[in-house]
Length: 78
Image (cartoon, rainbow, N blue to C red; front, side, top):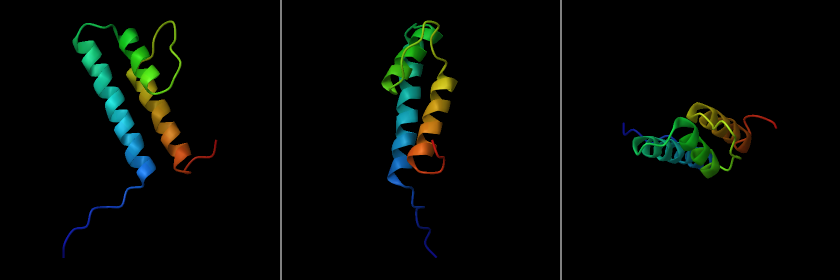
C-alpha cells in the first residue's frame, strides 16, 4: 500500500505558510538587532494587523493568525 499525502485545504496551507513567513521575518529582524517590540510590530504589520505602542509579541501575532485561519476555513464562526 502506497501512502497518499493527506489532503490539506488551500486555506489551511496558506495560513500555515503565512505563519511561517511571519515567524521567519520576526527571527530575521531579531537576529539583526531589532527589539522584540519592533520586530513584533513589523511581523504584525506583515500579517495585516495594526502596530501598537509597546509592540506585539510573536505568540500574539501567531495566535491571531491561527484564529483567522479557523474562521476562514469555517471551523469557527465569527
